[in-house]
Length: 202
Image 1 (cartoon, rainbow, N blue to C red):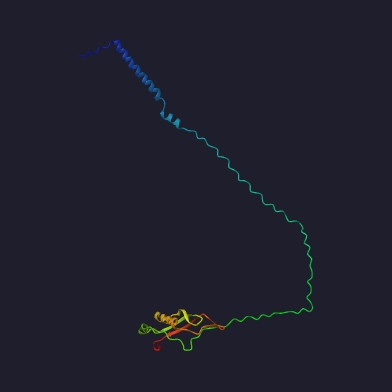
Image 2 (cartoon, helix red, strand yellow):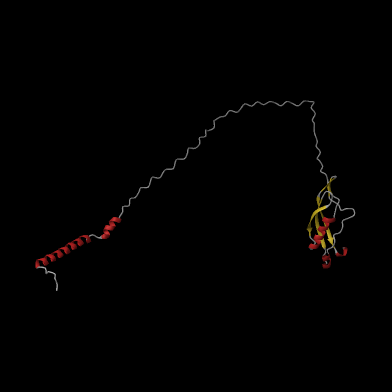
């Protein structure tokens, strides 16, 4: 059982008219607002004017400096006054003096010589004897002022290192020459000598 009072006919008509009027107003507002394209509104906001800025005028390069002024030479330059005086003649009794210089003769250098008793023979390496190694060794020896061998090197090899070393070591250890002489003065010098290793002469 409903306790709600039933509306009368005029009340119902009034309610229907209010609802219809509300819908009409809603439709009118929708038609007016939808008449404008939203993309055109956004486009109008996005469009921007492009203003071309004028480029500043280019600065002109400064003109080059003027060339240095060089005055032209004068048309005529008078020569300087020069006085010439004759040289005095030499005295009649003057005797010509001539000085003759004799070239200074350099002192003669003489090479070293082996001592009168001769040079001792280097010992024959035992391995070379077994292998039958023979050959000649060329030595360059440095002699001091007394003729003693102070240093040396092998300039011509025998072909066997044992023979080369035996000759060089013995020369530095045992050999002494009559020294090189420059005039009457003994001097140090280099001296070349050759020694031959031969088995039948050991």
